[in-house]
Amino acid sequence: MSDLLEPLIRQRADPHISRHADGFYYFIASVPAYDRIEIRRAASIQGLVDAPAYVAWRKPDTGPYSELIWAPELHFNEGAWYVYFAAAHTRALDALGMFQHRMYAIRNVAADPFTGEWEFLGQVDTGIDSFCLDATTFSHLGRLYYLWAQKDPTIPGNSNLYIAPMKTPWQLAGAPVRLSRPEYDWECRGFLVNEGPSVLIRNGRVFISYSASATDENYAMGLLWADEGADLLDPTSWRKSAQPVMRSCAADSVFGPGHNSFTVTDKPDEVLLVYHARTYTEIVGDPLWNPDRHTFVKPLRWSADGMPLFGRPSRQD
View 1 (tube, rainbow, N blue to C red):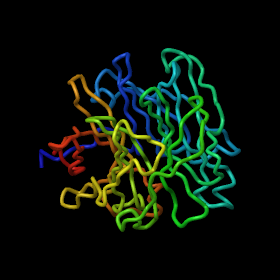
View 2 (view 1 turned 180 degrees about the horizontal axis):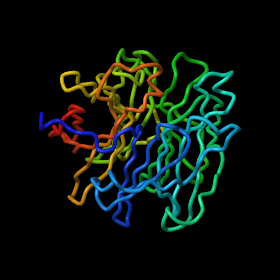
View 3 (view 1 turned 135 degrees about the vertical axis):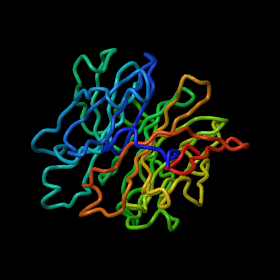
View 4 (view 1 turned 45 degrees about the horizontal axis):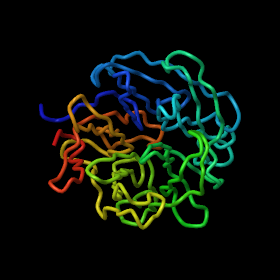
């Protein structure tokens, strides 16, 4: 059917697209080999398809951040470029199991992130020594925030959503505050997961989209929101949708939409929704090693009362 969306970029999961002040769109995502951090840029969204990939960083052969490089995000914070990503220890694959990731940051102070040197800054320490990943940052009312997913060793589940203020773009200034944990049935299918947060500030509210459940066809997207003048570090400032805002569309063969980001166009107030999804369910082996999570992009719509409408992952509406 001609009105179905086609993937923008194939075999790129956890996609993050941002539009910088230089007018370029920057694209970064997990690569199927999980061994490096690649960045693309283009003057248009469509131009990202064929844009060459610049390798900003490659994992070392051994050590605490030498395996499973997941979910990088590129941000320009306080005059420098940063990539936040998760990585696992070499021994995790052999003895500890796959889910032993910690979060790390690299920095480039050059105006052009395709030049200059990328400096490894080390682990972004949250004060909780447990599995964590999917970090993003955002600025609001003059304050820089860190937002991520992490396991709480004291409660059941794989990961919850946390927020903290930042002292520097790679160091936290306060203790983690938990905003959400898996509680609804659609968040607990296969795994108890809240992960992949992304922030959008519009219409007097701060929105956090996130993903839940296992990364197969059960993967779905949820939404938190707070008034833009509220204390974002107070969990009571946030409301949570009891239903997913985007889920699989079996009728159109698009499954497991999630780990989204938001970007903008030249048109005032037009927001684009960026996410990954699969086009089949017959996954052989562990879904995390399946390379066929593709990047999709579509316009985000809005309700009359200013709430985002995500629609179906398979169509423009």
